[in-house]
Image 1 (tube, rainbow, N blue to C red):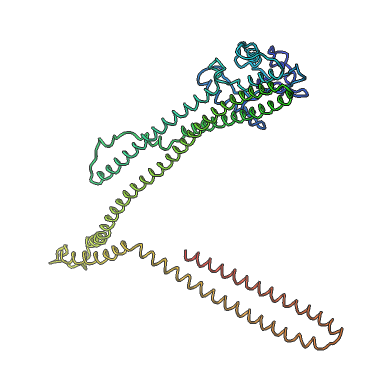
Image 2: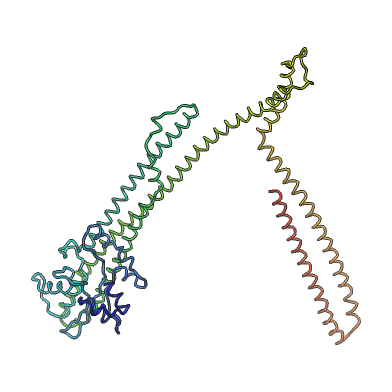
Length: 508
């Protein structure tokens, strides 16, 4: 059907004449007509009617189930029933059929309605209201488990089977995680023991071959959990769509019942009671389906929560494993640092002595020789070698042990010197700002003193006009003075902040 729709949208007229399928010819003829052809919709097209669902349609739970079971591939469709009651003896209905409608199809609505009409276990159809009730009952219960005889169309069973498979896979993944966690604990214990034996120079070939390291891949790989989580999410999404369809059916059945009750008003109340009874039965059937869907949704929600917890456990275990491994590595690094420190002390002690001994091997005439012999007395060599060597080595050893303290002392000294120099500059700047403020205040006070003498020279209307103009002139320098003070204050604060940041940077 999708291929035929695409060809019709692309106006491929050659496909119209080469096709011998009545369904394809119907789409080619009426898809682009006015009004447009109302084609069938998949479950995702019913829910996401504003987007393209081509990829989602081939990833339905029903489609995956039939593909894994090597059955004829099926897609869950949501069809619509259009029903008109005209007068007291005419009903017009319109509903789609399956693509290439097969014979003896349990999903054929028309055959189901004819079968119900000819059934001897139900009362005969006496009016258009009975026929409308029969048609709506057949359409609302088309996926009833007790009605369909073919297991290939038990779609709710397909959902339950998919949920069961996901549950089984989730249990297996949790067991694999538990086994990998135990293997990681054994490996860590072996690594600690092996590290302590290596310090003693002992090796154990038997412990070198303690298991493999595949547990690391199991603990760090979350591909299977993510794929299973996506499948559980798809199941929940489709169950939510089906639940929406069923709720829509309940709403339509209630509206249909009220409409038929309005039509059946009269002195005879038995028809109204019959209509209510039949629609209550249909309402119960849809509610049973809705409860099944809600029950399966709760199961899928539990699986989704379990997988989320498993991923969380994997993350926490990976963090704990990494922290424990880092702790062991830190302990081993500490032991190596102590070994390096021991060799450093030995080097500090014997390097000056080696240098002095090398100097004594040089044939220098100033060295004291005994009885003209080329050799030097041992007492003289040992006195110089050990005395001078230890005099050099002991301060260097003290510096090596107190190197961190010396570094901290030097950093504090440099920081305090930088703060002292910055503080003196900041103090000078503040004094300059204060001096400028005092000078400005003196100028403003002199201006205020001169104003009354100017105002006192006039009187009457001229005095008032002159006073107003003088007041305006007086306000202008005052505003400029205030603005000047604010600008100077901002400049001083910005310079202080720059100095503080510069001192902090030099201290760092």
